[in-house]
Amino acid sequence: MLPQSFTMIATIVFVLIQTFLGVNSFPESDKISNLPGQPPVNFQQFSGHITVDDQHQRALFYYFVEAEEDPASKPLVLWLNGGPGCSSIGVGAFAEHGPFRPSDNNVLEKNYYSWNKEANVLYLESPAGVGFSYSSNKSFYVLVTDEITARDNLVFLQRWFTKFPEYSNNDFFITGESYGGHYVPQLAQLIVQTKTNFNLKGIAIGNPLLEFNTDFNARSEYFWSHGLISDSTLEILTKVCNYSSIRRQRQNGNLEEVCAKASKQLYDEVSDYVDEYDVTLDVCLSSVNQQAYVLNQLQETQKIDVCVGDKTTTYLNRKEVQEALHAKLVGVTKWSTCSLVLHYDYRNLEIPTIPILGSLVKSGIRVLVYSGDQDSVIPLTSSRYLVNGLAKEIGVETTVAYRAWFEEKQVAGWTQTYGDILSYATIRGASHEAPFTQPQRSLLLLKTFLQGKQLPSVK
Image (cartoon, rainbow, N blue to C red; front, side, top):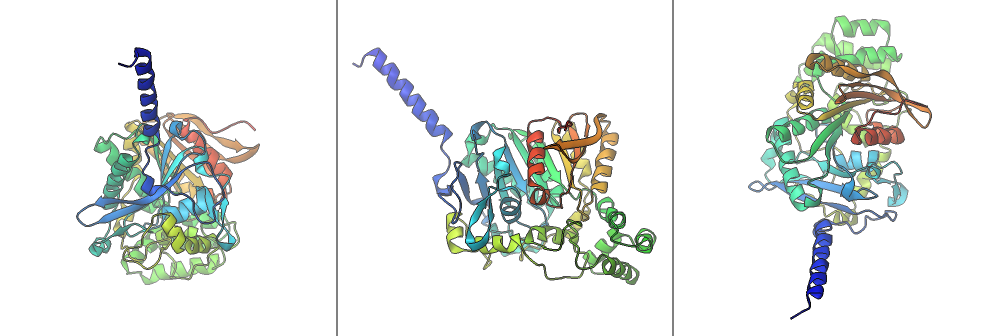
C-alpha cells in the first residue's frame, strides 16, 4: 500500500493535470498553427466550419483569436459585419480590427490596435453563403431573412461554446456595424428570449441601420452640411422625393421619374470622386466598403476600386491560406468580400430595430451605439436622434451630459450616457468602418465599453 502522503501528492498532481487540460482543451483540429506570411505572435488562433443545420448541411465559418494577454480573464467579443451579406473575416478581421492586415507580397502585417489586445474576438461569416460559410442545399440562398440569420447565429454560438467551453463563463459582448444594426440586436434579443445560458453583458453597434426612414433621410442634410450638394438639391430631396423613397423604389425596381431625376441631380453634384463612407478622404474605395455599397444601392452599379480589399481577396483565395484556416469553398469557386450567391430579403431593411435596443436595455443588457462622424451612409445625426428618442421613450435619464471625450490629449469624439446602461458616442475623423480609419480611438472606445466605464473626459 502506498503511503498516505504519496497518495495525496499523486491526487494533487492528477487534479492539476486535469485542470490544465481543461483550460487548454480547445479543438486541435481547428487550431491554426501559422497563417502564411504572418509575424510571430504569442496568442492562439482557431478557425473552421460549424454546422448549424444538420439536415441541409448548412455551416458557418468562424475565425477566433485569443486575447494577447491572460485570455481566460478577458471578455469574449463576437463581431458581425453588415451588408447584408458581407464577410466579418474579410472586413472586420483583415481590414478593421483583427491582429493582421494583408500587405504587399502576400505578407501579413501586425495591427497594433487589434481588438484582441482587450478581448478574445470571434469573427463570424454569416449568413450561409457569405465568405466560406455555405449551404449544401442551394435553395437556402433564394430568400434569406433576418429571422433566419439570427436563428442560425444562435445555433452557431451554442455549438461554438460546446467546442470552447472554457469561454462559457466569460463576459460576452456582441458587436458589429452597418447592417449589423439588425444582426446584433436581433441575435441578442433571441438569446434573451430563449434564456440561452450565455453570459451576455452588452452590445455595441457602429454606424448601424436602426430605422429605415430616419437613417436614409438623414443623408441629404449630411451631404448639404458638408458642402457636397446645393441648396436647391437639398430642397428637392426634402420636398419632392426624399432619400428613403429613392432607396425603397430602387429596391423594388419601380423608381419613379421624379425620384430618378432627384437621384441624378444629387450624384451629379456629389460626383464620382467622393467616398460616401468617409467624405473627407480621397477616393480609394476598398472592398472594406462593399458592405456599405450593398446597404446603399442608391447609385447605378459601378466598378469599385480596391486598395486594402484586393490584398485581402488575393490572400484569402490562396490555397495554402485556406488550408491553414481549415476553410473550404462549397458551391462557389472563390472567396469574396460580399456574397455573390445570397439573395437577402431587402424588405427586412425596413424592420426597425431601435425598439429592440429598448427591450435589451430593460433586460439589463448594456447598449452602445457609435458613429464614425465622416460617414454619410448612416450619418451620426440619425443615430444620435434615434438613441436620444429611445432614452426618452423608455424613461432613461441622462447620467452623463453630451460632452467631448479624449484620446492622447486630442478630442476623439463626443458622447452621452443614459442611465449608465445606454450610451452614444462619435469617433472623430472616422468612416463608416470606424476601426479602419481610426483604429486607436476605436480600440479605446471598445476597452472603455467592455470595462463598463465612461470615456475619458480629461485632456
